[in-house]
Image (cartoon, rainbow over all chains, first blue to last red; front, side, top):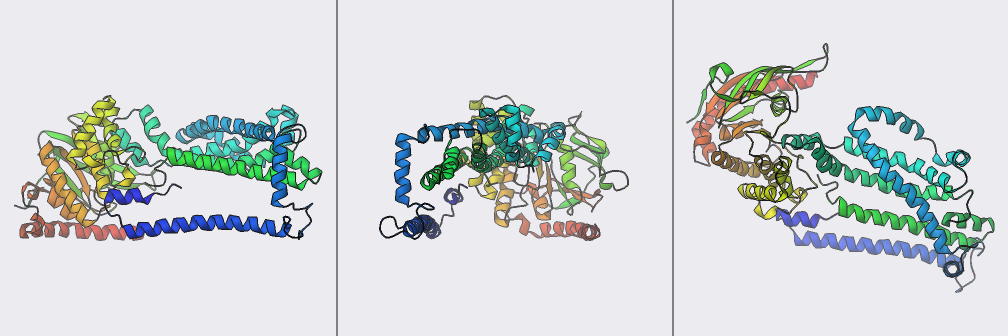
Length: 284
Length: 276
């Protein structure tokens, strides 16, 4: 979450330089600790694989060294894997995720808001969403393949099936959680229903919607791996899964790292968007 | 200088601006229903600053919610200038205890919200907002967000926002209850100044007897649930210029009278809490 107590301090005129310095020092220390933790994991990887410095402690077939993985990354980036470049695999995966994600937001958020604001809509849509929610959506993939074929459609739909309920329910709960006081305040200021929606309900729901979206990003990347398990010949998860069949552990690791970077990058992107768009979140 | 018993029922006063006509409220269904308000009869005239004090749970906030149009009375009507109130409206400005500001809007846009809702242009509404922010002493904070302000400043924004629509009546639901003593006293003085300057009709709910005595022209004491009017007074302290009026013996004597009335009701309210 965006934490900026500095602004608050300035506004109420109770800024205490000592305390602020201490907070800044703590923040800096924690950043270094984070980097150090990351560095330690990398060092451990270097150590157990030898990395050319000493004989590997584990079989390189099971765990290649970071250097080998880096070299494989470069090789894949240049000459591709099984007929497609690494960029192609990456972009096709991003596209599958992106289309499903986009549809979920564009339809899921309004549907959720409607459910939150209108008990009739909620009564109609809640049972199908609630009863299907516990079903692991990947288990439905074979069914989707029968229904929608082995092309892109079934993959998109399985991701949508997983993300749509999460996003719409987050939107529903956010709008239902809007303080009655704020709505009453708007009413007594003479606001029309449209104005209450656009200038009170929607902005007040945004922080909760963003939280739902960020959870959905994580799940979405997971779903991508499942969706690319069958009936594909490209995609970053497909690359990793196929390479595993040939015990090309270095390629598997490249795939895993690229997916991790994808998930992390998307999360950072949405965190940034969140900080910009809903700077007031959690500060009521 | 002091308080004097006075009849504030509709029959006793002429030319009520806000007429609360045998308004009662019952919550829940038949058997388990709770009578929150016994029929309340109250006339508030133009320029009155009427404070209602009562023990917690006595229905004083319910009464304000009915006047604001947020809740329906079980029986009786509320009329503003003769028109029956059925829903919230911009001629009744409401200030809440806390948490009612639009956190996503700047202070200026919070105050401009009402004028915008009533069809003013962005520019006009902004100018109105700046005027009222000056009135409450927040000129330098127009571009800030509510969460950047202290509790007292947030309440000033709430007051400016309610005033910006130039409502006929101001309804205040314990607006200072969440503030610390010093801030509260400062704001009480300021609200008195603003009231004198604008001549608004005010209905003010509070559980603080001092606040009520300091601000009110009329003071209503309510009983424990089911709430009804136990006593009503005309009150003259708010017309005095002395900011330290609360330290005078006349004030202490008036407070003694009201505390005496409220004490038994508060004990009854406590007992109800234990039982329920």
